[in-house]
Length: 253
Ligand code: PEP
Image 1: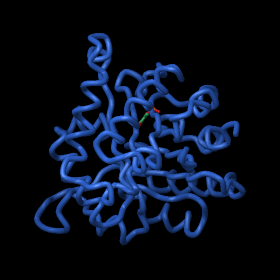
Image 2 (image 1 turned 45 degrees about the vertical axis):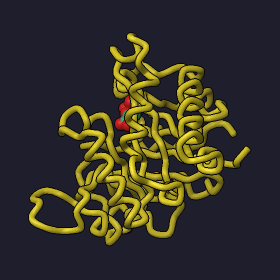
Image 3 (image 1 turned 90 degrees about the vertical axis):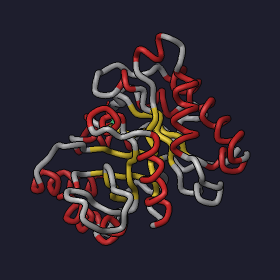
């Protein structure tokens, strides 16, 4: 089996002023200096990316964006492009987060265009997918995920997807305090790996990191990371405190 490098990613959403972001990242860099065996990423709000990336510098903390627009430049008021992100030291981008799908009209089609932009500019895309509570209750979880993956990755070859990270984020577990059990997460991650295998072959399926998101905390990370197909976590609320985020990064291994 492929040896996948774990990824713990923090999504700060619309939290922290620029000075709060600077203080938090300084603390994270200081506390995690010794961690070299996994990848760590922080996605601050757009306005803080530049200063946070400057502070993270050559450290082991990579910086990501929470969104991007697919055009390179133009009259698109309020939007940010892939080359702009690259220019301030961004290496990752979160695409299709459920909050963007829910509140900002993001669809599988716009997600696909954003994936294209990220891939064209060699950013590492973290493609978020997940089912609602209603969809889980009506046993539609797998069909919903199948559609989100196929449409989100439509038109790409396995060569395009070498950097892909899939984030399974059940909507019912985001910011709610409800976590999928480690067995529920494993079941879905296994399904997603087989789906990747069916569509892009065994090599890509085995090398792609599939991370879990939804109320990840220091007290549930060990159990989640012990699962074969859970390769990391996308952490929202618990990434806002340097102390809590660092505890998650220091999960048992
Ligand atoms: C997220 O924002 O991707 C997330 C999983 O949030 P939380 O950890 O707060 O549930």
